[in-house]
Length: 182
Image (tube, rainbow, N blue to C red; front, side, top):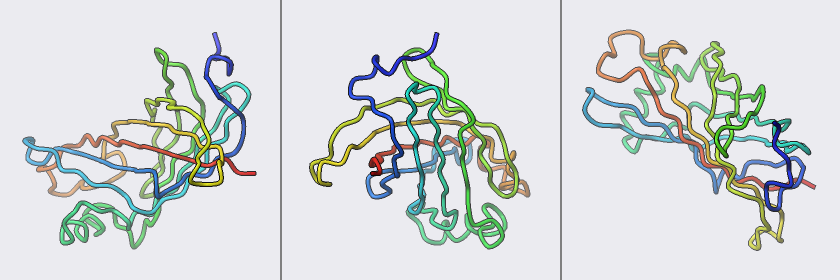
């Protein structure tokens, strides 16, 4: 059974540009198996295309890997180094959806995450938060989506040498607000 746009109040089709000021791409992983360390990326762009049937919609995002921000400058520089992100050789991280499916009232956004020249299938557990006018932006229609995924950093060759103090699993949390383009 496919989702009907009439099931989603205010749902409209269109192309939406991610508003990076009101969005967040964050991560967390365990350090020493004891406590989580967190950070986010401060520079990214993205687009959502909503189709008549939400399951036919598409999502893409491009992240500037050098914009990683953990709250501690020396750690950020280490993360950007060849030990981890190697931003000098791999400046961007991209996600492109390949399909959307229903998941207990929410959605799974299937796609491909490309990082450090490796492409891995990833499913984002997504929640459609709604659509409405943004009075601060000339009442432009705005969409909100939350998504979560867990990836294995080693699938992308990140921290494979002597970094056993970090968990392999990395939780990615995405909060997106996007404005409809005219």
